[in-house]
Amino acid sequence: MLLDAVEGTLADFLAAQIVGLDAVDPALGSLARTTRDLVLAGGKRLRPTFAYWGWRGATGLGEPLDPALPALAALELMHTFALVHDDVMDESATRRGRPTAHRLFAGQHTRAGRLGDPGRFGTTAAILVGDLCLVWADQLLARAPLPTSTLFAVRSCYDRMRVEAVVGQYLDVLGESAPDEWSAERALLVARLKTASYTVQRPLQFGLALAGPVAAEIDDAYGRYGELVGEAFQLRDDLLGVFGDPAVTGKPAGDDLRAGKPTTLLLLARQLAATPAQRALLALDPAGAVNPADGSGGLNPSLISELISETGAPERIEAMIQERVATAVTVLADAPIEDEARTALVELAVRATQRPA
Image (cartoon, rainbow, N blue to C red; front, side):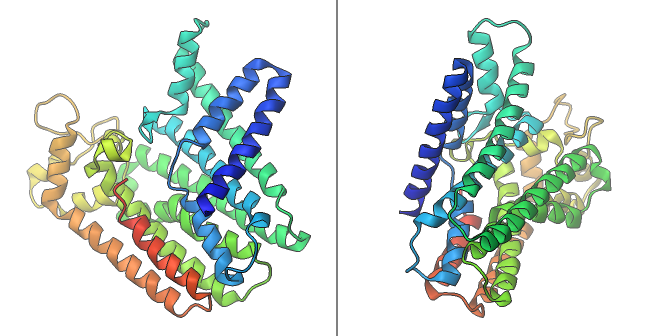
């Protein structure tokens, strides 16, 4: 019911945007349709789900859903902004098994026989799509029929979430250019800012703010639970980026390795490498990517993933995930929230961190 309601809210909002932009220029209508397709292209809808249960934790199940829907759906528009820009920065080819936004626009440019470089056009258009989604998220959030004081509290949490996502992404990009300055602890900081904040922690607190003035104990519990589960979510993502099945994840395996992204998994593997040969294979080439010294002349993801397994780093990451989820469940046990929300959040903690994609 929740996901259908969020999808319907997004579809109605985006349909109206398409009509408005079509009336200005058909090319803008086309832009809006491509953006709509990106927003509605599936996904786990974790952010509105966590926000919903954050809200229900304070209100119970009796409160009508409709007034909260614009705010919940706005989180998916913000998420699309982050994904589109992230894919541009990572030069990713696919997302959810489909071409990324910049690849879609490059393809449109080529098929239309336009002048100029299709890749440059695609990148430029994708950046604008991300910007548009962020503006639309603000517009949709503003439609929530909330008291002014409540809306200010919601906006405060929303703005903090956006800032943390942006600065976390900056640290992520910086880590690729200065990997020797990175540590597993700093990689976890990136996970807290870039992933935990806007995937779990702030959506929960955003949902709580929708309920109006509430006990500080709930906000504190959501903050701690959200940080733990959000970190575990990113640690699972690190594992999937190396060992996941592309047919399931919708993304090629080994992208993080090719980019030389200093994930907690890779940094732990370097720490645990027991022999000079292992350390050499996990070293970086001048461009920053993992460089297999096997004479292959380029990165060999299969070789590197096998080596990472040999170091025992994946088992260490699995233990870190389990520890964080167990602690998060303990935090919820003492939180003064509705029992239905507690049960749902325990289930979400497991589902978000044990996922295959």
